Image 1 (cartoon, rainbow, N blue to C red):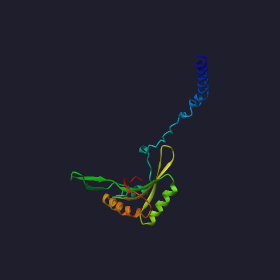
Image 2: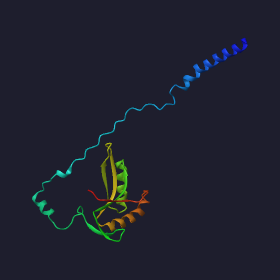
Image 3: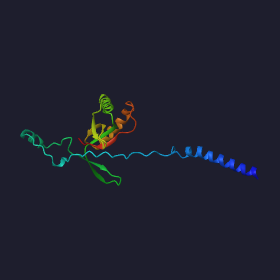
Image 4: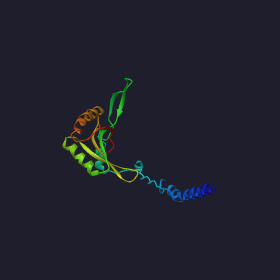
Length: 175
């Protein structure tokens, strides 16, 4: 009987040593996801309210603004058939968005490539909520919706030579 007690005591000591050595390594928190500090959301950049702005023009400029022919920024109405077959008026001036870049140098390079290919292109910068700028490369503006669709088809073929994938996006022109 003394041998069985000795074996039990030795087994208990071995299990105790294993518990002292192995359990701290198992439960040291190494597999836990570390706590992240609270992230702050950047504040929105307020956009100015342009509805209350007015510009006083010299007398000569006021006379030029009273002319009767429409300008590019004025809206043009064209008739387009809807899905039901009815004729619907499409109002606006249109542009094609080719690409958007965070790096304005890349946007300028693409704009210059489009101009060399014979397209009237421009860049438009927009402020993002984090304060950075997004530069869009646009082609146009075009007053007639049918003309902008034809330009989109022509431009889609030219974009492959400029290493741009994806079709251009038709958007309303805003200066």
